[in-house]
Length: 160
Image 1: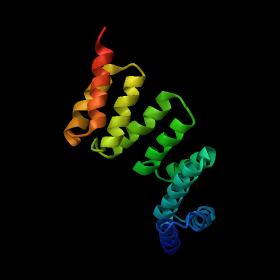
Image 2: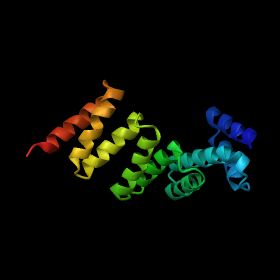
Image 3: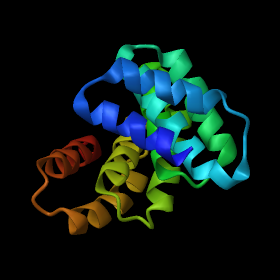
Image 4: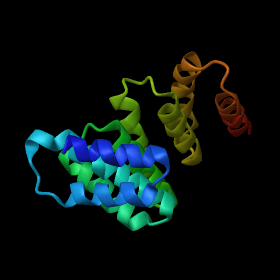
């Protein structure tokens, strides 16, 4: 199983996406053996990411759900699930749950997840919750321009 995953990753790195996808599909269709659960989850996440880049949002969502059913504490699966839900134009609350899960799994140290959470809180109209997260993100990456623009959005939403 590990050798197949290594082969898929090497195909992906060399630019042979079709070959990589075929190997990943083989791994995904194999019977579930808990000795290889990490490799299977990795294959599902890579396959979901590949489907998302191809524009097959439903297939990507299905692969991501498989990965999450095997491992609820997979940061990458939750992050990918958030991206999938954004592309599906799902409810902001569902997207927020995915990014909050990422933020929590990385012990509140993932700048991109924290930014996503703060931005979603702001879009939902809850500026106070966004303002609680922004200082934490700012400590992680003080020079990040996205965070500075987020602060400006929060400040402008507070003006009456």
